[in-house]
Image (cartoon, rainbow, N blue to C red; front, side):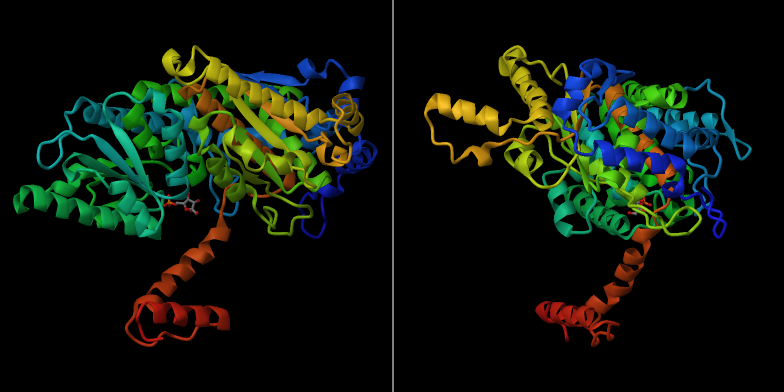
Length: 567
Ligand SMILES: O=P(O)(O)OC[C@H]1O[C@](O)(CO)[C@@H](O)[C@@H]1O
């Protein structure tokens, strides 16, 4: 329904929302045990195969009627038209007046897409080919450092989207690393980060990739400056002053949309790999921001990675909403967030290589959808933004699963697992037995979460064993805890791309339903500017300027006192 005062569509006032609310009141207490008993075919029916991803959403607290109503909600929110507008390159990031075209980063070279008068596909492939040529030189050893040594380590210096994607993907695809280049990642302004990451590295064989869309991010510029100092000091110490001339050009490249600032920093723009303002930082791992990953896995595997994204882009663009995995994932997110008041979602990869995937998804979803106003600036009328968190299984099982199983909060979970282990080293894996143990846990957990164990079943067991019954209430497993299972053949570059694209599009669909701009991030700006303003307050030798509030004022003075400066 359109609010005449604001002309914004308030999804919560639509007929589709009202129908879902009424339906929720009817089904909210239904148990998955009964839902499965009434609909035994759902275990195979409520699944979608998208590329290599088998997406099972049968263990959700939804009936087929719920799903029909949720899809109706998506249609009411105009998801299909909004999706098509995004894919066409319309300026759907309205608060920044930008197109949102991360999908263009993985279009094949023969695709056609012209946006704002520019042949986007041609530009994307031009950069990809420069990245490929550069990483070929690194990997073949033709690119040499200032003392003539070949590069062995690339250090990506970036933060947020310029770090989380590359580091997550580097770890996920460690088994595909070949060509002799390894990577390290520096992001935090805490000096401990760069000190730790550079420890043991030889400046003669190290190349820094400074990745920053804006090339103005305080943390990244601070770390890049420290890296340059480390490089020059190290080279001087090892090979003398004479090698320093031109050393930065041989040991520093940049990834940015801002050539002017790159060159101001002292990096030759010939060694800069560009991208575009229509790529959001958190959507940029498949742009030049993935340079460190390409250096490690090579251009062919990187192409596979992009092809994986594209597979899911095609699925998202063409599958009917009822069989569209990202759309279903988003609708389930809305169902639990807005109708069951769930605050968070656990992401539980049963793959140690996906250790950083939950952290990556935190930025993707929370920076995208953590908004309190709709795209037209009016307040939202329902909660937005899911809080994502998680750890790889089975570690999580021995940490927080107790709360998932018996706690008072509803935490829908995404379980991600693979049929094949990343590495099949039979001597260690026992020809798959370790992986089978891992995956037995994977299947057991979703089963127990959904179906639990009743007091009657527990009583029966205890009686048979002749054990006292006072522990029964403690042992009851309530079940009815929803989860999605995503099962794929193996964690390959393509499958990783598919997984990322699945979540990207789900985040987009949630944003469309909530009516928000999922592609800006104004909420992080004020903290950045105030931090910059506070640097001189902390470091000056003068008495510090009074702060606006007494808490910050006292803290700053105390800090200065502890640092031995006048407070
Ligand atoms: O790539 P940049 O411009 O250094 O920005 C880094 C990160 O900072 C943010 O702007 C805010 O955290 C993110 O959106 C972005 O990924």
